[in-house]
Image (cartoon, rainbow, N blue to C red; front, side):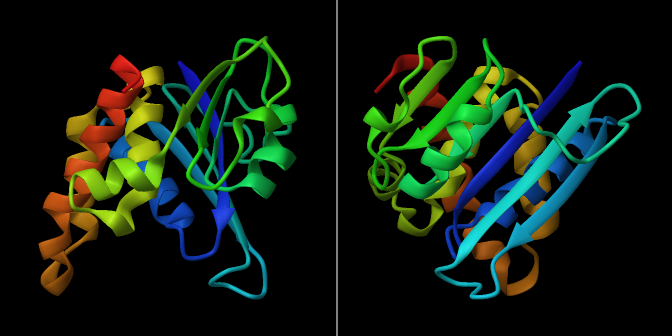
Length: 182
């Protein structure tokens, strides 16, 4: 098993966080992982992306030019990275901030989801990226939702622990959207 994904959006959308959560969930499951964050000098509001590789074998490089998947949380990210996805790959696109017409290919599985609206629905308006992560995990099976929950618990400690339930709810809502399309 080998999964590579580029997650991209504006700084402040939780891109680096969801990449870290995926990597931690992989480690919890005993898998090999790499997590390579990248962000513009502007930080919040600038560009941010991260590449995560999860595998049951050794990983040769954290860099990928043709990932299996892309999670795009805004229009510029969807425009830039959707063409990078390998045929038969997966695109998760946040239609709250990106128009699905940007994707002009039929050789990939594309999940167009209103991440912000889904997060608001479960009372987690700041967790839109978690809905996308839930959809990605549901579609790929790269890690389990339970492992993501454990990663959240290890990451959000102390005063931040109060955010665990809303983030778990957002992940589960994203997974449900990926399963049922609504």
